[in-house]
Length: 427
Image (cartoon, rainbow, N blue to C red; front, side, top):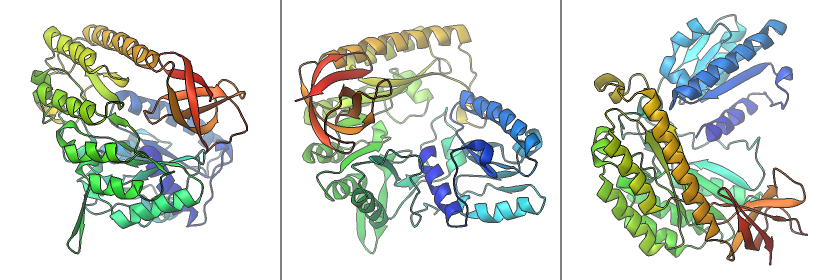
């Protein structure tokens, strides 16, 4: 979401006579787009601001601004604590940036962190300033109303509001005409997407089908799904369209119903596994990834073992795994004690990571000998003698370069694998 927001900001500033630079020391204005989901992310921003302060000493006219969730959460506190900052703008205030910059030019600090009930930036064409020209993000909705106990997002991004379906289709169509071959539809919970106008309604499944129908050569991905809203209609839509990628990111967070209830996730272990069964039934070749939190409040060893057993049962292809860190102003911070010792959190996280590495390696090993359609995205990070791309299951595939170019679809036979990568050759 932050990457998509940065592209929106770039477009707004470009329309107001600013232009981007790849060299930070040449910049007159620097924005840091922030996340507040984990404390580690905020600490990284604080460190980054120390570096910005050194730049400002060399160039007193340099304007430094903070955007996004951290700006929304801490507001004026940041202006008081971080002397390098001149400007604060929340996720719904990007249109106000030109005015805020004018305020700073007048010698004042500037801030706008008002949340909106209708802002979607639907009429803004994002500038793909750091794109490979092949893959792009399209934001289809903003905000969240799930209020998971550990999560700060609803408080810093506001209520859910869906973007006009026609504007999404138009953006995807223009991207395809400009050579892009893959789009990822983004939302805090894409399953909640709902657009209604003049008696016409569109669910996320309906929107997904419409985007996929633009052209069979346009691949569609999406993130992120919430288990309690993952419908059979959506799963069947993915099965029906070959260009909707067979990959679903379905955060579980914990394998224990006790902890899931404590987290206010809105589903049980059994319901999550039932959704997994539905995916396996209609999409037997679908890759499933997830998010897992180790050491949430009151998590017992039995709860932890249930998470490990669920991981083995589902056999996730990939996972994002974190140690729980309390976020201020969340339900958990207000009502629960962060009572799992740090050393136990670390041990449990280590066990989760080690298990997932085994599961990922096993998943990739099963692909050896298979042939996949791969969209070439560019050169491998390690060698310009190899191309890199992803298959429908969102797995990275490396293979020797040929006369093909980025943006081409190729058939690649997999010869070997690691826990993170498939390695093959065009056949």
